[in-house]
Image 1: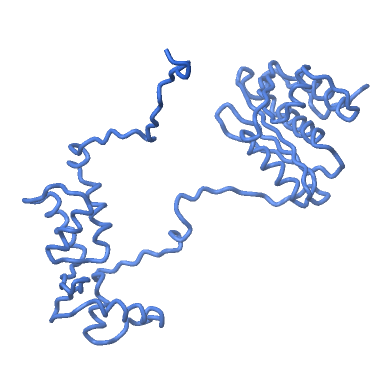
Image 2: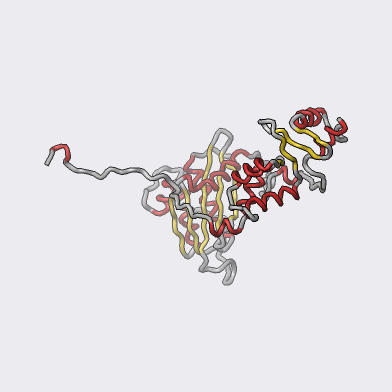
Length: 317
């Protein structure tokens, strides 16, 4: 049986990548309720990926789709002038039939096997490996995606671009606002004049009234009512930094933890909104605490008690 190959001519001398470099190929086929698709990914020696995907518009079985995916990847590798190739697939039938460990009796698979083995003659060294399905998720995703995309007759499909996002989406939408006012400015202004900030919505006004009920203004000093009705003086960011520094590593500082620092500041009669979180951050950034703190030698997993075996104990001594 004569099988005409695709346009895979022998490369000329000096063409393509380094003949001694090792390249990888992973492939997979997918058949679902939408249609059939195949995917293949060529892995360069540097670890980058070159993906290929095709939608199959003819009736085929799962094994035929696996053969189609493997052949597509091999043909693309030949076009790239690759000479040493490691092929990985999760189909044990296809891998073992190409290796010659299994015989091919199904009439629809015999032409695929013969054609694929002839394609392998273009390489200097080829190794085939069977891998579990869990390790072939990238090629499987490509095959599933190609089976669900509607491709027109010109084989034009939407281009998928993958970007790197290093921060959450709301961070990009947030605009930096320079505000030198303390965190309690709106509360203090409302208690002083019973007026809302300009541009405040009904929800903002309701929140401001609820917050202001827990504060007390004495002259120019704002106090926070504690749960035991003790008044705590509200401080801005600059004074809060001085308090944390003095309590943590000042004249009488004991380099206490963030929770202990927050309790000490409350007992001293001071308050700000993010007090406990700021104390935790200040304690974690302390250089002396990082150097001289006790090292906690705790295993990452809990230890299990194992009883030593006592063979033949049921028969006595």
